[in-house]
Image (cartoon, rainbow, N blue to C red; front, side, top):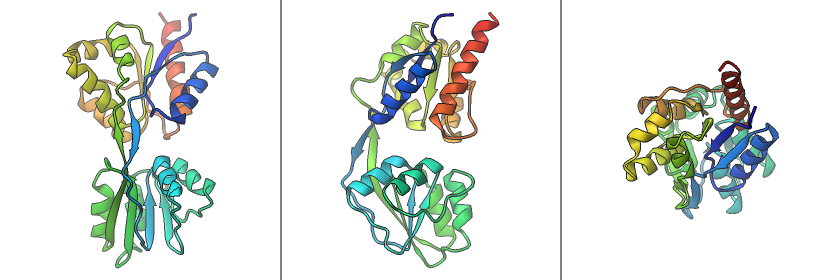
Amino acid sequence: MSKPTVAVLRPDDNRIDEAVEYLRSRGVSPVADPMLTVCSTGETPTAADYYVFTSRTGVQIAADQDWQPGRATVCAVGQQTASALRVYGHSVDVVPSTFTSAGLVEELAAEVSGATVEIARSAHGSDVLIQGLEAAGADVHETQLYRLERPKSAGRSVSLTIDGQLDGILFTSPRTVGHFFEIATEQDDAAELKRGLEEPVIGAIGAPTARVIRDIGLEINITPDSVDFEQLARLTVQEIRNGASTR
């Protein structure tokens, strides 16, 4: 059996390198096509009683700014975010059992009335956290630490999909999906892209990512029960090989 060819669309930093290395370790021919580049806004978290981080990237940017929580309660959405905070020497007080914004709102709702909450994240976050915490009585402030833009070099995976040369595609965020389809739309290839996506195994991390893909009218083959990239890649490759063995 020949090596499966799988497109990985992670940000153009160490995450794409780690993804490529892992796919190769699974006997896969990876196509690295970063759909995101991180652009810092230069903004810094403001003083608060609670700090909320929603991504490893946000933690890294805050750490580069020498952010310190003082006596504040530190909250993280997801174990990867929490791990990043610990790497920089910060204690993590709250990690919701459901790794979502709604899960954190549920976790904090009973204790934040009258408190100031600082949400330090990307410029593309949903309103779930802000609205939920304000409804619980908190004074909420959001600092947009970074934007996620599309690299000029992105698009190889789109062409390969249209040409029927991919066995699988790994989507890891809603914005990744958006950029992937924007490229096809700009090239007047959206219909061809949808047809090309009927054959590859599609893997998606997280409910928001899966929702965007389904809203476009596509089926998802793999949605792991965690936000771990390696689990996504492993299950997708397994599905590709299972499909090949039954043909």
